[in-house]
Length: 47
Image 1: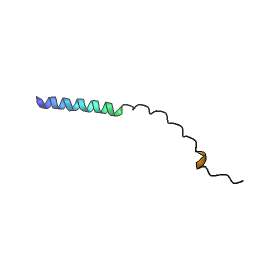
Image 2 (image 1 turned 30 degrees about the vertical axis):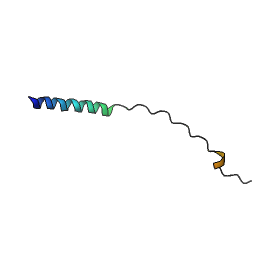
Image 3 (image 1 turned 90 degrees about the vertical axis):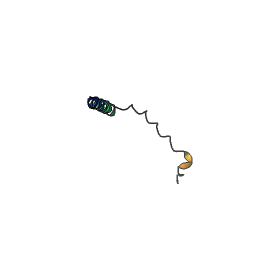
Image 4 (image 1 turned 120 degrees about the vertical axis):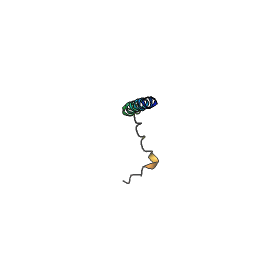
């Protein structure tokens, strides 16, 4: 009898695991826009 209970538990665990694994993950927060380059990092223009 205990083997049937064990089999039922394993089947239930597998069902829950498969459902959890296939659920879509939460949406990632929107990517922050890149900050503009700082003026001191830009090379001076030669005219």
